[in-house]
Amino acid sequence: MPHWRIRISIFINYFLFAILLNSVGTVILQVQRYFGVLESSAAMLEAFKDISIAVASFSLASFITRIGYKKSMLIALGLMTFTCFVIPLVKTFLAVKLLFAVTGCCFGLIKVSVFGTIGLITKNEKEHISMMSFIESFFMVGILTGYFIFSNYIDDNNSSSGNWFHVYYILGILSAIAFFLLMSSPLDESSVKPDASSNMKAEFAGMLKLIVMPAVISFIVCAFVYVLIEQSIMSWLPTFNNKVLQLPSSLSIQITSLLAASTAAGRFLAGFVMKRLDWLVVLSACLLAASLIILVTMPLATHESKHIINGWSSLPLAAFTFPLIGFFLAPVYPAINSVILSSVPKAKHGLMSGLIVVFSALGGTMGSIITGYIFQSYGGQTAFYFSLIPICILIAALFLFKKIKTKAGGAEINAGLAAGLV
Image (cartoon, rainbow, N blue to C red; front, top):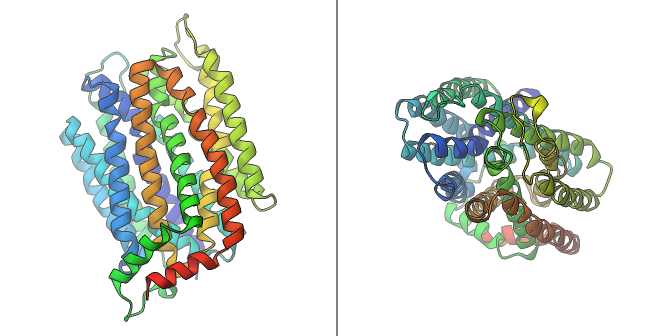
C-alpha cells in the first residue's frame, strides 16, 4: 500500500487544525480588543474548544472504527470547510465561541482517526514514536504559519477592524483542499474493522474499564498535566507580549511564532533522539530545562520596553528567550502518547486515542482558564510562574508512569480491553 500518500494526507490535516485550534491565543487577544471582553471571559474560548474535543472523542472513540478512520476525517473536514466560510459573515462573540466548538468536535474526529491510522502504517514502537514526533512537529509548523497569517490581517491602530475574520476564508479553502486530498488517499482499514458479532456498547464499556487501570491512570495524569502547561503558555503568550511586554498586537502574535518554531524543532529532533535514548531520561532533562527558562526569563519581563518598539529588531530580550521553552516541552506529549499506544493492539488504538484526546482537552481547558484568572488578578508574570508547579508534578508523574508501565507491561492493558469486550 502506498503509505506515503496517506502520510501526506495526515500531515495536511494536522497542519490545518494546528492553525484553527491554536489560533485561540490570537483570538483571545483579538476578542479583548474587538468585543471589549475581560481576560476571564476570553479564556472561555479554550473551554469551547477543548470541551467539544473531549465530548466528541469520548462519544465517538468506542465506535469510530465502525465509521472508518478515513470517513471520520472526511466528515470533519467537510463540516470545518462549511463553518469557516460562514463565520466571517456573522462576526459576533457567540459565533466565535461556536467556531471553536465546531473546531473541537471536528478535531476530536481527526485526532482519534490519525492516531489510529499511525498504528496501521508503522511497524514497531520506535517507528511509532518517530512518526508521532514528526507529525506533531508538522502540527507546530501549522501553528507557526497561523500566527503570520492572522497578524497580516490585524490593524494595530483600529481595534474595531474586523478584517481578521477574513482569515477564515483562507482556512476554509485549505480545509476543502485537505478534504479532496484525503479522498484520493488509499487506506486499508481491514485489520481494525470490528467483527460483525462485536457489540458497540461493550466496546464503549471497554474504554471505560481502561480508565481504572494503574498504567492508564498514570498516563492520563501525565497527558492532562502536560497539556495544562502547554496550553496555558501557548494560549496566553500573545496577551503576555501585548500587555506585559507592551508590544503592538500584530507583533505580539508574530513573535509568538517563535514558540511554535521552537516546539516544532524540538519535536523534529525528538523523532531522531527517541530512537537512541530512553524516553524518561530525555523528557526529565527537557522539563528541568523548561523550568530554568521560566526562572530566567520572567525577571527580564519586569518593566520591559520603555523604548519605542517598531519591529523585531527593537524587541526586548524576554520576547525572544521565553518562547524557547517550547523546544524543551516539545518531546513530552508525542513520546508518552506513543508509549501507551504501543502497549495496546492496533485494533484498539481508537479506544486509547479517545482517552488521550479527552483528558488532553480537559487539561488544556483547565490550564487556559486558570492562567486567564491569574493573569487578570495578579498579572502575566505570576501567571507564567504558576507553570512551575505543574512542571514539577509532571516530572513525578512521568517516573510513576514509567515504573507502572514497566512492571505491568502491555499485558494488563490488553487484558482489560479483552474483559471490556466480553
